[in-house]
Image (cartoon, rainbow, N blue to C red):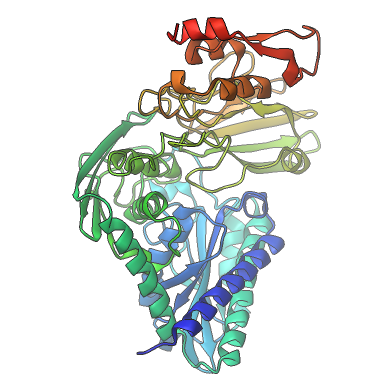
Length: 571
């Protein structure tokens, strides 16, 4: 089919606007802070056969890419002839979509008259789905919550009341959980209405021809980028806090890339296992981010990327393996892959990041009996780059936003006593790794409470590259000093103060090659201490202002050039 290239460009841009409207409608009508504040979501449009044409600007790779490759399950369960306008499908089956039972995908077929022409879908992390709270404590997926097969949430515009009752009876946050589901339905409806108007405006009866050209362009662009990389096999390996070994062999052959995770640990008895769909999601994201970040994201950009992992391994687990905290393994994959490609991408690689998103779930009851439950996301540092410092407290690779303190203190009887960037947490290097943050959390008033800390990099810090230092390890414990177990629920006393020290990222290059002015600026900004400037960077910075001053100005700091030259071995 010959398609007007100008029309393809116009329709492609308009689809991006429609996807933005879909996401805005979802976020603005969502009930939970998980969606409304942290954007733990993904929105996308698909052609009539379920191939992803495009995604909204926001969203996590684990959601959007897993949804893209998982849409085939919806079409297999409900072929076009079994659907009518007003139908809406959903599922949270980990092996069919985003790999975790808390992530619910809602898919809406779009009709032009009686013909199915496209799909809009979204995937969101539900604030609760029953079972155990998100942790690694479950021994099988059945303990982790309500598992919903692909089924109709709406039938011809009418809500499936029985399904709604089942959900309401099985979750701790029925209003938020169902409110978010309705927000997903609303977002899809907004997207569908915009697409129907667009087709009418251009007199089109189908989107498939234009969609195919959009996807083909992305495929061609990614293949061209892959062709610029030297053919070869590139390998890397890392170990997580749980002593899980992740190995990868990346084979670049012409315009194709094959990613094999053979040699990685077998699936675990704890809930940190990753389904293959999620493994593919973060592997394909890493390839595009490292090699061709400007290529539009759709099914075409997946075609040259082939991902395999041994069946029964931690990256391709089999039912009924527990999977609730699968992000604590899956989020390491981009750093692992980019590390493998370090030699193939000179000057364009990335040091190891803090990687795994820190997710804490706070639950309890106030003196009046009112219960609360709040999921809070926080992020450590992002790895340094060859020519730029790493970003601090940035959700790489998840893309999630950290939950604001104002939201935490409004939605639960909790207080943030401190929330600051963590000094000296970024790995020392010619380019410094991104910083983590320090947060201390206390109870407000008479409450009973507990916390689930889904965390990693407390034992194994993010490595630096090319002679740089590692980022600081994280810490999850009480301010008084006691360490708390991660990935499990911990009961807290009324006077306890929980301290979270989020990990920093690795640096890039020899720290002694970092510009003296950059080290001085880091000290002034509070990113690097005077002691670390001297010990790690060989820069002698001195504070000459009032030692009792609460505010220390840039002009209050001096660099001793002679001593710095000695420290750096240049004199």
